[in-house]
Length: 310
Length: 310
Image (cartoon, rainbow over all chains, first blue to last red; front, side):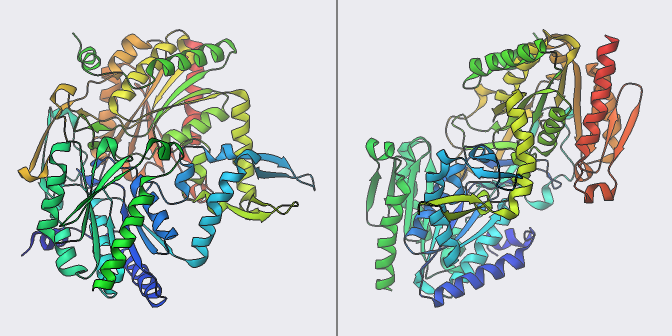
């Protein structure tokens, strides 16, 4: 039995799993009929519980910038997007206001009939209009399906559900796996039930390796899809080698290789036979451009060729 | 040498530490001169890095509900509030809209001159007005100082800075320690620099116990203040015993004891000589009342007596 089968057998589906799976299936089916390409964008970190009634957990660094910016760019390119994201991580459109207290964008006014109203402060109107126009268009075409997760196990169940929904539409589907998935977890049956007590001295934690879901994803769940994974390291010397190894091992299409400190300025798009460096100049960054615009434009071209080649 | 001294010597102050310490000192001094009581409300969980260039970390469950609701109630009771909170956890006032996409509260309009504007949807106006009125008043009196942290070490440095600022105003200061502080950490000099590699099999982590900062806080940093700590457990059978032990060990004034699953419905306010159960009826909860209103009203009375008795 494969280790990923064991993983699913030893864990429970997330809350509202059946409801979300149905939403995903209907979204894929509708947009596929309307002739749109589809992409699953995963985003944010995954939580790994250390206790079964969870107070403590291991988490990984990701606020969801890569995923949320990429989702906006896929929408701009005409894709229908399933945005599978960590709860409370950044989301398309609202991310532009993540650093402001939104109550500070508003002010109290007295309306014509003497009652108190609320208005948007004029100084913030133009930025809000720009974002709202794109957001309204996405709502009207219903091209964004937002599904959230919290734990590693929630994520893996929903990833499989989306990949399986994609298996019906062949190469028109892209998987863009930008979530920062934990490499380690503690199996459900090894978790202590209650909060770990601190009086017992230093804490020893033993974690098992998370099964590599890219393997069943490419081989069984969505074998015809165009699959893009990410490799994030802090050590430059091993980055490209690890990206190449992943392509060899899982036989998918693209690895986007990046270094933690420079990930907003440069990435390398790695395929079996080539490496392409994507770089942002200082003037592009100063102008507010984001590297995901270039990455997504590149991937959309590759996906186009992939569909024609199939 | 005490273990907390060792902790601070082995870690670095957070970014903008001097700036934040000065902001805290000025805030305390100003409101003390104006005759206001002050409270430090700590809120949210603390992050403990597993790598020095942090990709992974251990965290604890807290979205900051208790702290953010309590801060609003202390403001309503006339206190000046230092809100020391985990970055991206809930904050007073904005918390009322944490579950909505705030772009959905707005809509595009055409203004009189034909340009595009943004307005607040009429159906959301009344709730927004209610919250905005309280928020505006707090801004006008400048009674809320918001300071954020991310890691355990950031939190401990800022806690000490606030407690030391309180040492100058005697019993008029309250410390309301609602943050969920990690009991374990890995000392800076034992952290691996780079991301832990997953190819090496199961992961073993050894964590040290975090020094109990309540001890120097009560004995050295702010010995005259009114100090309230929290005890959160999942196991009812040990809760009150642990609260009593904490009071005996640290000699502070109050422990608020609560169980993870029922913490919004009931808490026990534990002092050296009494235990008072605070309970929300179903009808109170249905009406949108929050247990923090009762807790804070009770604590404000106790603090009043404490100030008179000093």
